[in-house]
Figure 1: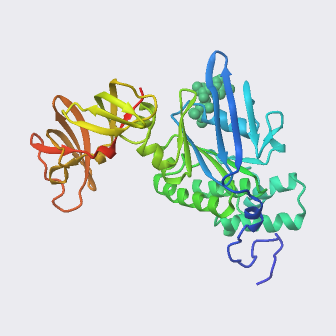
Figure 2: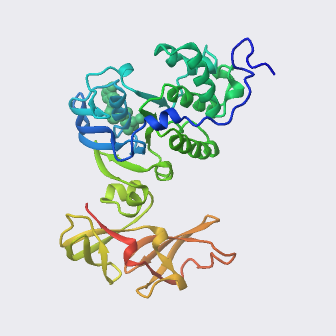
Figure 3: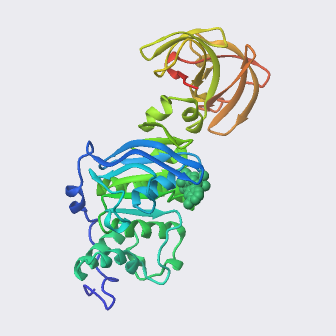
Length: 385
Ligand SMILES: Nc1ncnc2c1ncn2[C@@H]1O[C@H](COP(=O)(O)OP(=O)(O)O)[C@@H](O)[C@H]1O
Ligand SMILES: [Mg+2]
């Protein structure tokens, strides 16, 4: 097989996956800050889209901005890219103020939900385009394009045009194109939402691997909480124009600081409780089921009426219920195959529980029956309003 054919790289022999060492050695350590957003606000007319937001993104991390549609995720991403400027505040990329710096002078690239490939160009031309604009030498461009297409498993389609590809393949090419110039930060605006479910799942793993292998800081935007929990090193939950919480997926899910986060990320029960005493991150509360329990509580929780969050999967039923269990009526149930979801009622308070059907006989609790229900103190958390 010839080393090159007339179009340059179509029949190039397959190489082992390139290590992208150039990027990894250049990238900084995880404890350094790739992005600093400091007091950034943005109004559209009288509408306050972002209210003085501040947070840092570490070098080499997979950072996700998660929030409902319209909460300002794209606006924030466009500011990092330089397509939009903040009304107040500053944005630092690797320690350098960039608010006055135009998009093409920032080492930041974006992958969009709509791929935004050039339809009249082949895949390799699409990937080469940005490198040509940067003035890279022809031979370096050729080798980089080959390397990137291989990395996203698209080498065999190098001479096709975008219209000849599926959605997932187009998104891979868009990724290759955005990563080719070795950006310091890659911005991804809901890049998987146009793909079907199975593909979305596979692409999550690919994206995560790509991020680990390249060591490039990824800033990923999504409204899909599962995507965020699955992929991220850290998540910023946005809502109402503000950062509601920043933390690891486990912190966000297990220790939501407020009702918005507990409700937006996963399912939960909000139980009305009375706080009898709160100090040092713990509180003593009386539940509507008559128990007195010691649970974790964020700073700011005080005596009086409050809300306790308990996830449905943390409520144990029947012989799995703890010693502090109470009797509950089964109001309704939904058999989902792997799980059964129960709607229960005790002392006039309804709540949900879900149970894994770990054996053939898993779903035997009848609607209308009474069953023991309970949860560990460590599974519940008092919330700020
Ligand atoms: N150029 C604009 N002019 C007016 N309103 C805008 C503009 N861009 C965004 N908005 C508004 O700002 C809010 C945040 O938008 P956006 O950042 O796109 O949200 P998200 O990406 O989280 O869905 C929305 O209410 C949107 O309608
Ligand atoms: Mg958006």
